[in-house]
Length: 391
Image (cartoon, rainbow, N blue to C red; front, side):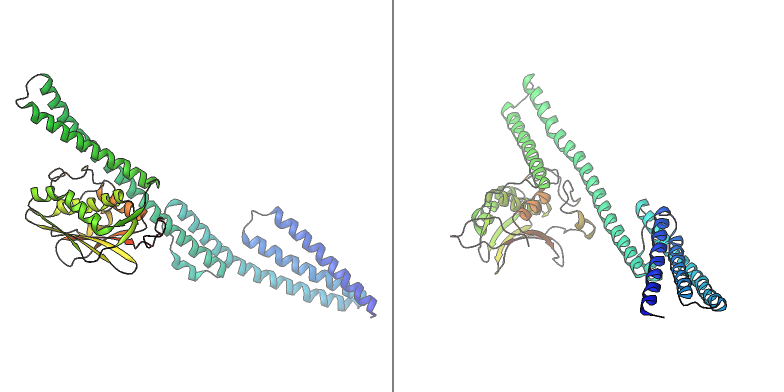
């Protein structure tokens, strides 16, 4: 066979293979919705047809005898049939693996847990990866769904509590105002003082609602300036001293090491006050509430410790939820420092996070509770004040 004949054989074989490939491509597009085993067998049949076509062209070019051509075709066809059988077996296995993925996808949509353990039984590495990704997505979706449900429950509880906390003072204001209008108040000045106190309580609740809404929306505006954390903690304690004295609670401030931080003193003071108020709510009569200020190279901390009953483990996850109130506290209005709707800790956490810090409940190893506000240490006073970066 000359070189030219060889090139012709190669060209004809390539042309036949290309034609068969185009037909297979068109067929695969036509049956795009068919099962994966049909696609696999189609590919194998196309490959066998291309080989048989090439054998026929080679036999014609080399002028082989009929016996030789028949033998070559028999070998090609037999090999093709065996290849198709093998493709059917392998395709059935791959098809079962695809059904496993389909079932996992349906389970994901139906809210049924997707187990990643079945990935080890799949015959294809890509399928195993897809199944693990589906399992991970299912876990994330479940976590997000649980968080949404928890938040919806918290919002529902918050609405109920706010409605109650608004109804009580408003009912008192109405009753006292009617008594004044009818001239039935034995001590009008005392009634007016009580009305003013109830109005202040409503105002505090409204302020808390505005604060938590701005925190949730990410629109809490901070006016940062260099602030002495020790002075701020001392000012907060001084503001709440009368409340502590009324309950015979010893409220003390210890500044182990002062720190200057870039902060909004009004908002950060409110966060510290909420933690101190929470401690006063839970401390027993004659108990102690201690506020400590410490600092290291990176973090300044305000630590609020009380000797109350402590926080049960079951309540720790909900501690900073808006509207949640622990059952071990005093009556919500016995020490009426905040609005009474259970927003204080949620506001404290939101304000501290807006400053780039975090609030944690530490394990005291016994009774009482210890809350720690950690804030980034500010740049030198000569530096321009800017929001601290989050840890």
